[in-house]
Image (cartoon, rainbow, N blue to C red):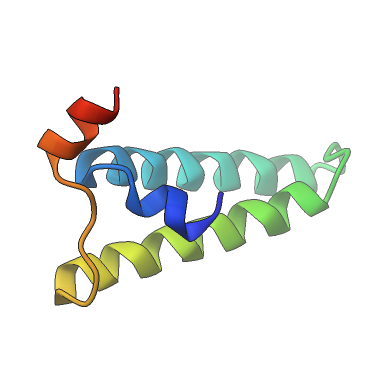
Amino acid sequence: MKPEKIRELTRDEVLQWERDLEEEIFNLRIQNSMGKLENPLKLKVARKDLARVRTILREDYLGIRALASKEKSDVRG
């Protein structure tokens, strides 16, 4: 997902997505160690997405660039 799309999400949504990515990476690493991972590129993409999410969360924490507020996301639908 592109950073602009991530920044449109609320903090809770981004944190949930971070947890989902961590779980996905864990499962992909297990599959890879067992030799059952069909597409190793999935692991690379998931790790890059996790790094992107964590960078955006850090920007929000430091006040560099804010995530969407809850009110804005409710209007968006």
